[in-house]
Length: 300
Length: 333
Image (cartoon, rainbow over all chains, first blue to last red; front, side, top):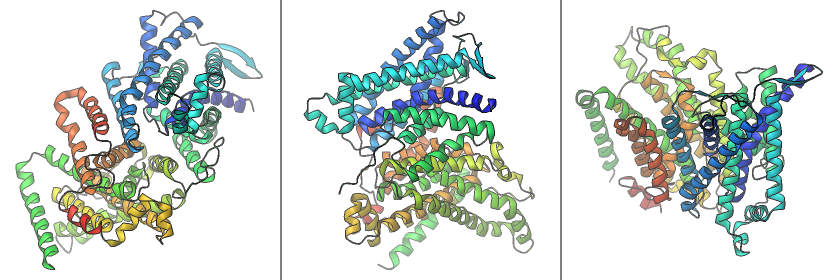
């Protein structure tokens, strides 16, 4: 029982990281109907930027909450810029050119970031500086809760709450929802569609950067190819929750994290990577629009 | 008129024999390997073009079928093929036995992949558009991870043809003409399939599924057929890959490989067989041509991919075909 609760806690921590990445996929899909395969690489760049920022700012060896927040901020800003750049250079020129051409440029950008990453950062793994000194915070009935887990969860929840506020309560959020609902109609109503899409990429990339930093805290080994698998699985999480749905991505990410941790803990770790895809295929067959997606009616 | 296909076939066979004789003498083994990889990439790309380009379904898990063809054929060779070849070689010369054996291995790899293609396609084809794409991506990864967990075929160590119980029998199949011959057959079969009268059904499904159904095209059957044929040839490509490299690992068949195949098809032009051939050949050769740039080559490769796509969103050839396939295309349009 205690073991189960411990696994659940680990799963939720890991799942909140998936959720942060999944949000970027789902928001971009919402406004552009594009599967942004380069998103996993933005998460990698987020972790790498964090590594360099921590060293440059001289906080790599002085663990504190302030250091974490500072690095988080720098990395989120850098990745927000990167997201804007990717959208501007690789996707905007292909607006209206069908949906497959941007998919290929997405794959191209993903390859570019991986390979440029190996060139700039070096192909060997790096060790993310310990921005928080790992310690057991509380022990509730045999479950150890570390301060890192609390920090990861708190950051993720704060960011998701902030995102929910932006999407639900601001002008930009309303514009985003309008574009996602019907882009041509939104344009007719005076919504600057291109700017909204750009803003969506910035938001999504900032969340991916945060996920990269949080991963650096809990699994310090980072390398230029680290974005591949988590990127793909976060995408699975987005589909699980219902691609295009913001609350869906959060729930999908948490669910996937918990299921993966439980499968690793109780069944077999070799199938850890397969489970995400089995869930993917099952959900697509049973309920393709995911847990939170509205069923689509087919128009003739 | 009757004699023309025969003349063409004769010409192709003569060319292949010339390649087989000349290539190893003129080219160094490195170039021969690259050319053979190009041939394999062409087979896989052209087969994917049937599903993505002509039938308008979007599959991004094609490497999974290559993996099945590769591992099924390699397992056949390692566990049974070597013994079979050894016993046959008592009666007929080994060289002769190999000439008969290797095509059978390729067909076997293709058939197993085709069965898996049906298993994936029948449930997956209930989905459309992006959801179908995502499902094929998932199916491809499940196949890869499942193979990774089968210890009999090496699991994470990879699977070597040298691990057979009969090390004296060389199970590798290094023949440039063989690869090109199979590529030629693949191209010919697929070109006939899509540009002969019945091939209109594929394009009808691509253009408008509802309209196609309303005029009596059995859309589900057409889509399953496209998947079946495509996965068969993907399996053949995988079997060729396994037997020419002599060692396979599931890493060669991950989603990165699937994406690469999709890039061939889209960059070449969706709905163009010659486009897929051109793109597959160019993009396979490009990293080797750029080798002089050292670490920068893959960066430049991805930049070129992005730039080409932005400059020509419809792909290199769009839906056009080059000679000689354009002659078939014109008749059917």
